[in-house]
Length: 474
Ligand code: 5AD
Ligand code: SF4
Image (tube, rainbow, N blue to C red; front, side, top):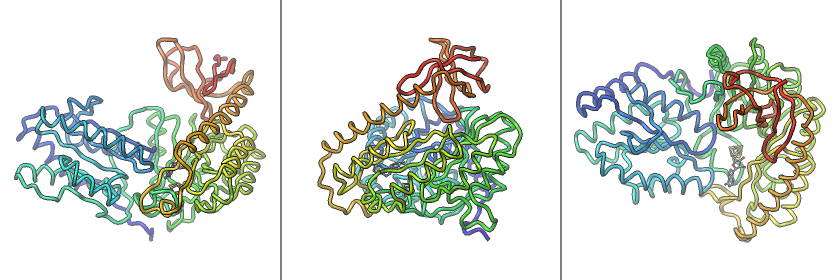
């Protein structure tokens, strides 16, 4: 038995979708209702939004990029840092005005923000015009909740039934309809939730316990994506390296990669995110022997100071992290590393910070996602004394960015004169250039025709910039 029950999206949802369709057509007399979906945060949220879009289409909506003309506005929110929440609240406050011109407008809030009690209190107090609020565990219940919201509206009930938070256990839903924006690149979730409880992070509280999808479901979805012409598929999870734990099948992440890599054809497999504590030698052995797995690993280190890493509950040291990097380089000499860094964790000193810049110089990451620590209510780190000012943390961050800029520039310069296999992803008509991506996830601009989009090209690097490369097709 799998630890997490599996639930199949299907008949129940389709019947609610049909009722919603009928409501717009017969009661509201709207022939072509429009839905606007705004996504904040990580790839997992992008992937969830693809499901919301699929369900909205099943309900008879056309998707629009213009929130002013929408009949439904859905905010899929992020809670990872305070500024993500502030951005969402800013936008939600703004769309309130749209209800004046469209009294039938439904405003829906879902995603990680909604799983926090303090946010629910704030919504009740200041954002009571939101029609429906539901959490990350209820994605499959969206059609039911939305229909109930409509019924409440029709019967003019001002019931509080609009909040559906923490309702469902940690299940895995299969067979969602999904609408992907891009027809070359796709996200494929392989697991949900997180068990790591890094002391600064809200994710385990809002996304629940780690649960893996059955490999057969993943393989079948992967196969369909390939058949539909996708060329670059990113496997998603908060910690993909612990894939398989709790499943009744005997499988781990490297074994899953091997199975996916076995499909014929020209395509790239990517994955994120990898926790360093679970990045085994076997993972790099499998990448080095594979035909399709990208020579890139996003391996968030967060910090270079062992004292702070311990307080972060990361379960590795600077030395053990560097050991992983060395092994990866020995097996895959052209591997590209990227990472996440948090600057200004509570109690971090300038000396701790210098350990981080030292680590950057040793690893030579191609690029970084950098963040100033943001206290998240309910996490252990939020209770720690945090004497360093925001201003000082910002100076550290700028210093770090300067160090990283030099590293990226040097790394990019070293690529000049070398040939890379790249995927042509999009076309810039202003300059007649194709935007292409290397296996190592670096963007290369090359002169070329639009019809090359979707092809893997051989490109000679001719010049380098801070954040990208220039090349020519050979
Ligand atoms: N403050 C700042 N950054 C954070 N991250 C997670 N939680 C916080 C926080 N409270 C960053 C980590 C993580 C990335 C997704 O977001 O670097 O790897
Ligand atoms: Fe957050 Fe740590 Fe889980 Fe990543 S591994 S989602 S940083 S708790």
